[in-house]
Amino acid sequence: MILPDTVKQCITALEQSGYAAYAVGGCVRDACLRLKPKDYDLCTSALPQETEGLFCHFPLVLAGEKHGTVGVVTDCGVVEITTFRTEGDYQDSRHPDWVAFVPRVENDLARRDFTINAMAFSPSRGFVDPFGGREDLEKKILRAVGDPWARFREDSLRILRGVRFAVRFHLDVDPETERAMEEEAPRMESLARERVFEELCKLLPLARAEDLTRFAPILAAVIPELAPMIGFDQRSPHHAYDLFTHTAHVVEGVPPDLTLRWAALLHDVGKIPSFTTDETGRGHFYGHAQVGADMADGILRRLKAPTALREAAVTLIRNHMERRLTKKSLRRLVSGLGFPMALSMLRLQEADMGSKGTGEAEEENIFPQLYAFLEEIRQEDACLTVKDLAVDGNDLMALGLRGKAIGEGLHTLLDQVLDEALPNEKEALLNYLRR
Image (tube, rainbow, N blue to C red):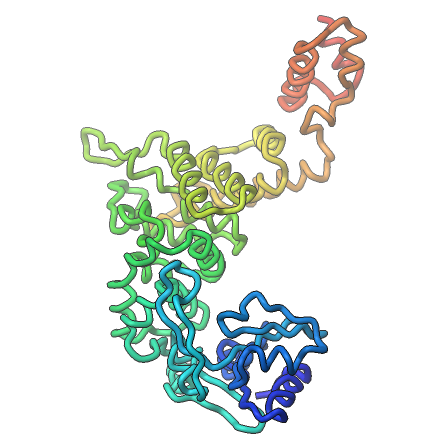
């Protein structure tokens, strides 16, 4: 394993002072997979105060000192150095109840979540892998360290982390580990919502349809609104998939943009409360887009999602059943949502229409034409907002309009221009108002 010079210098400084020191965790795992680590964490036999004294000439980050971690600010970023430790449960779902420092790296590795993350490396001491993490990587297996039920009871977020690792590295989950993940999933209800949202945001851009269906019960444990969608028969000749499988394919079908992935995951949550059947037994979901938008807003608020992401995803869900088949109607969509959101809307609609599982196209593929229309509108520098009009409030005041009538007049003119009933020319617009 080749370590950056800065990291090697930190290890050397600790070892020359008589302490054991190793690179540990994700950086070792990624190196075994021939991936470039994003950051490097070290573990050491030095106590936090000893580490702090040894690196006193560097800027230090001491926020995690009481849990054994000292951050050393280097030219290559912060290197976190943590004393070998064992720890208690996470009653607050974020920090261990207690930390005890231990003398050997093997004791430290025993507290970690999965074998692939329980490896350490030192240039002078070599590779330490007491739980067979390297072999599990070679065999493409995700396995908990020791008793999986104990690991997940210590911190149930490890269940979602396990899903992410399995998806990211294309791993099969050890049967006992997977059984423990599913049985302990209800414990995630007590997790801090921010931690759940952050973990889901790491997972969604990576996920394929088969990943989401494989881990559906675990996802439903943190988003209960997904649970009734699993296996739900839509009773429609246009849908071969159950509702959750359809949703999983829509998620895979959109680009790995975070807002789009959240919108895809939640775009049909309103179908269950909107479900009705007609006299033939066929299913219908009238108004499910608005119902789903309201539900998605509640879900994302509960998960403490950023306002901008929440509002954008909800807007996409609310409008995903709109069918804009002409350049004129697409221009109106752009006027209301802007170019980026209009493009995202088309992406979501295209994935939705292409994820029904029937193997047959229900209608002509209109999306290449719609994308072409969108680009034409962009190139035309078209009038799309009140600010783009060839007249402004002063011009309307000169005609004698006052107060709210000015705003109403400008929006009336914009409607006429968007409908191509009027050219965006000053005299034509003013003459229309005069009439």
